[in-house]
Length: 284
Image (cartoon, rainbow, N blue to C red; front, side, top):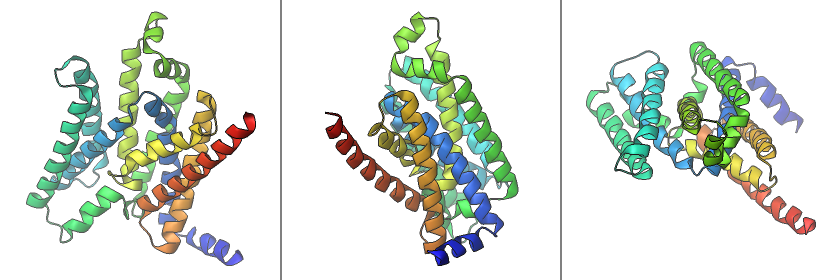
């Protein structure tokens, strides 16, 4: 045990490991805060759709040879989130179908652009890293870390300030509108925050595994708690803990970061599910 501890301490001396831990914790925390709302509103598929949009945005930035692809990717993802939300309310194409179209289309166009215009000698490796987050979290620059920190702080502050309204919109939009809360505006804010989280999470788990980062901690917390506040706090703790475990295991064992984090979250869900059954039996 002491040898493992010494190994971890030795790895913490490297800046890229510290960057990965800081960004990983912040992304996990932000994902868990909105994850509860998405699951309860049955909007979890939006995260999956926007993650593919973010891949398309990243592909465009790569083709244009941007040194930092995050601003363009963020702008594209936010615009698509707003358009999907507005369009699903008015268009003849229903929300889930529109998200599926944009999701698959963005993924296909992004990969096509990379194949046509990319000058990389390892296109398959670059795409794999983007889709599954295999190494990108360990290659962050200080500028990317600062940007992630700033965006994460904005997400957390907005969530805390609008907590009561997000709570109202999550459980009963009609009642929220009746009491003067404009549900449409807060749904729009939620969509924009989700887009920001998606772009941040691509560095951690890749575009194909982002939904797991949003959904698993929330579902795990719901096995143990019944109140919105309790589920949100427990989800945040589980998300941060599994992210730290996943990053450390990945660094030590040499496994893909994103897949390792998701595997840790699956194990946490199984444990919470069993504990929920045991605690439920005792309560009866």
